[in-house]
Length: 256
Ligand SMILES: Nc1ncnc2c1ncn2[C@@H]1O[C@H](COP(=O)(O)OP(=O)(O)OP(=O)(O)O)[C@@H](O)[C@H]1O
Ligand SMILES: [Mg+2]
Image 1 (cartoon, rainbow, N blue to C red):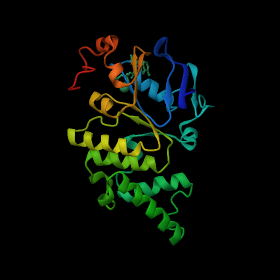
Image 2: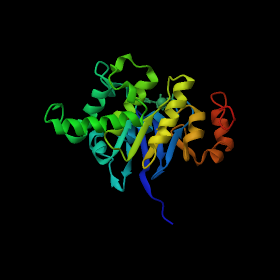
Image 3: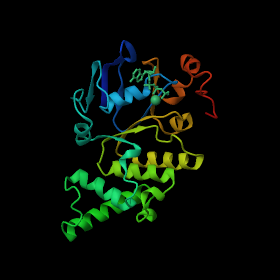
Image 4: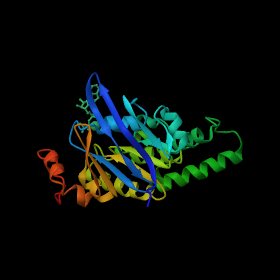
């Protein structure tokens, strides 16, 4: 049986002045799954993520999205193809309302940028879809709030709504719960689970509670290379993984 991979890398490598940060990585992300990229500090997670999202150019290797070679595409190119990176703080306008932020994202998608008042009908369709997206991420009640006035966790939900406006097939999340308190972490976890329906999600995440609760599969990086790959139960029992995490986070422990 052949697997249906939405994203694959072949010998993906990134060198910085002779130092190999990502070393011959072969990743396969199965369509419809939540896949986590983990590893101890300095393992190469961020570098790998930046290669996948086209923020960095690989030294060697190739990246395939839906079978197409995207190694030399730009972030904008791949966004149009359906591969979108979320949770970049800069992605929302702090002094606009929550609703306006989603409307702008929707217009970016349709290419009618900033023509808010084109016609009543366009406006209605836009408003309806924006409200739908806000409801999806639990921000219905916050529509008229000025973004900067929302708590941190809610801002991240808004970022997710603006990303979903682009209708991603593959959603790339960079540390989605970073810097959050317990309540926000739980909320964002539910949100990720919810928006994963009908999509594929690849996330870099430090919080092993989040990783173990959400991920179908996990790739563990160590010193730039893939240490192991599999479901959490398997990966967390791997002695090398346990050793790699010793003194940082306790992979496999119930409390993790
Ligand atoms: N631009 C750069 N120039 C030189 N070395 C770099 C650069 N970016 C990353 N590195 C090095 O590559 C290695 C991997 O870094 P990376 O940030 O990808 O790790 P990480 O797994 O994201 O770590 P963390 O858990 O601390 O976020 C580190 O040793 C880092 O110092
Ligand atoms: Mg990092």
